[in-house]
Image (cartoon, rainbow, N blue to C red; front, side, top):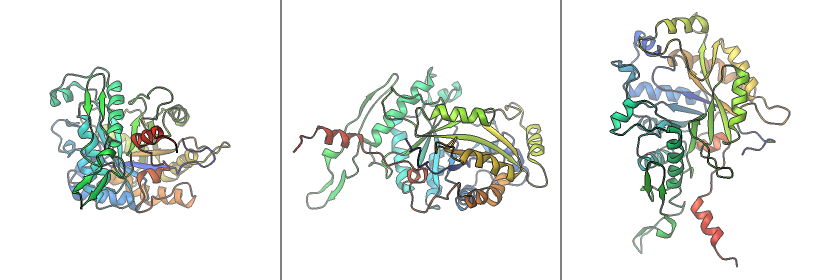
Length: 388
C-alpha cells in the first residue's frame, strides 16, 4: 500500500471512448459532423489528452451495440484501439476495458501482455463484468450466474499467466540455439468454479511485470485476507462528494489505490453545464436510460468549480493521506468538454502542484506510484533455495 507519509501522485484519467459518456453524446456529435468511427479522430483525442497531462485514457468495450442501429455504437474492440494509439503516444497510460465474464482468460492475458509490450509498459486493464444474456448468446455460452465470482477467477488466472515467464526467461543463446531458459518458464494449472486454464502464456512477461488492473467497486471481489490484491485501482462512485470519499476509503481496504468516477458537464459554447445537461437528457434516444443515471459522482458547472472539487479531493489531510487517490473523468461530450479540461482545468491543477503530467518513457505503474511486482514464481524459487 502507498505510504501515508508520501502519498502516491494524484491521478486524473479520462474515458476517451466514443463521443462521450452521456447517452446522447453521439447524437450531438453527429449533428456537429463528427466521424465517430475514425481512427484519426481516436488518435487525435488521445494525443490531446496526453498533451493536457492526463494520467491515462480508458476505452469502453461492448460486444453488442449500445443503441441498436446507431453507427456511433459500432467500434473495434478496446484492446485493438489501445494498440492503435500506443505508437502515437509516449507518456499517457492506455487502459482498455476487457470483460471478464465470457472471453477466454488465456486470450485476455496474451492480448493485454502484447499491448503492454507495444505501449512500452503503459498499459492497464479495466476488468469489467457482463450481465446481459444477449452477450452470452453472442459468445455461444450459457449465462454466468455469479459474474463477480467469475471476475475474481479470471483476474487471478490472468495474473498467474503474466508471471508464468520470469523476467529473464528469454535468453536468445545463439551458440546453443536456445531462445528461452525453460527453467524460468512455469506451468499454470488453474481450476476455477466454471473453467480451467493451463499455461504457460505464449508471450513473455509484460514490461510492467503485471499490468495495472482497474475495476469498478464490487465487480472483482477480493481474495482471502492476506492474499495479494487482485485490483490495483478501485473506481468508486457516489451520490455526493461525502459518499464518494467514504466509498473510496472502504475500497482501500482491498486495493492499493481508490479513485472516483466523475461525470463532468462543463460550461461551454455559451451554455452552462446545467443547460447542456438538460439538452442532452432531452436528446437521449428512445429506449436508452434517461435521464443520465449511473453510479458515478457528477459535476455540472464551470471549470473553476471543477478545479475546486478536484483540489478538495487531491489535498492530503492531517494524516498525510488524500481523501481519494485520483479520478477518472467521464466527459458528457468529448469534443466539447475535453478542450475545456485541457485549457482551464489541468493547467490550474498543475500550477497548484496537485497533479503532474506523466513523463515520456514512464510506465503506468510509475505514473501511479505503484511498485513493479516481483514474479511470484521467482520469489517462490528463491524462498525454497537452500541457504549458504
